[in-house]
Image 1 (tube, protein in one colour):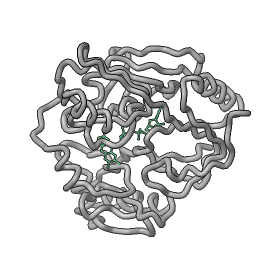
Image 2 (tube, rainbow, N blue to C red; image 1 turned 30 degrees about the horizontal axis):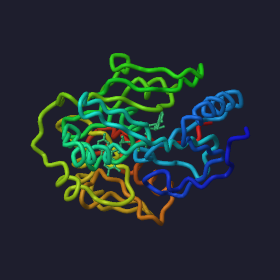
Image 3 (cartoon, rainbow, N blue to C red; image 1 turned 90 degrees about the horizontal axis):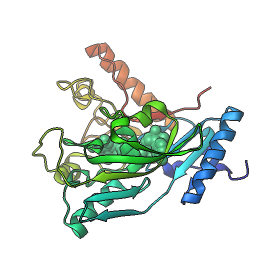
Length: 294
Ligand SMILES: Cc1cc2nc3c(=O)[nH]c(=O)nc-3n(C[C@H](O)[C@H](O)[C@H](O)COP(=O)(O)OP(=O)(O)OC[C@H]3O[C@@H](n4cnc5c(N)ncnc54)[C@H](O)[C@@H]3O)c2cc1C
């Protein structure tokens, strides 16, 4: 397949920065690349080769040395906010955090204040219905423009057809779309619940900086936080090779920059097994562990 780069170093494309390569690689940087994405995906399907889309890379752990398929990295940028209609249109690789900050500074629009300091792109936020203190991506979502990987058609999916739920969407369930852009209506504040938490203070003072993908495990229930369970099995601050759980927030799995993916997996398995034995609870990961599916 002529568009593909081979043997690409992709270490920098996941926020964990564990060393990784891709057998094949393509970067989507303009609208004219969208047709190529379809051709690459059709080729991959015919060859039985897997595909991985990456935008911000803040929700994925590479659990391989070499990805045995095609990594398609999205760098589609451009956005516009219309202060009269309150409509935000944005390409999918734009940073949701930077848009939220600019909306406040340049457009006096603070509806997305909660998204300031939320790492990742619009694509990642829409795909996983990213959420911060009562504000979910779905709240002001109108539609998104996608490439249908099965037909090659460019389609608009409206909110009512997006099947948004807790940290999920139709795009995550069906896995047959590449997200090109999205549209939001910021004329009305819609929150799942009200929270008095100062999100900027919270991010600065209660969460660690460094190589992580945020909270690694889902909270098993409203009453049981994953960080509490990890603390109770004495793994807060615990280290295996280059992987450790943060002293500041025990559910933040961190990489010190010197480790390999195996260190991360060993620590994940240790936490799951200790929590299972002590509490009879199965910790499920929030962050996607990307493997070579055989
Ligand atoms: C410090 C820190 C704090 C965090 N706090 C929060 C938080 O408060 N709330 C929260 O919800 N999340 C949080 N996260 C997790 C993460 O930021 C979000 O999940 C974010 O929305 C992921 O976006 P991304 O662009 O990095 O997605 P990626 O990691 O690039 O991808 C996520 C998924 O989307 C798919 N995907 C990416 N681009 C496309 C595309 N163009 N088309 C189709 N599929 C695509 C990928 O294949 C993957 O399955 C945090 C992460 C960090 C590092």
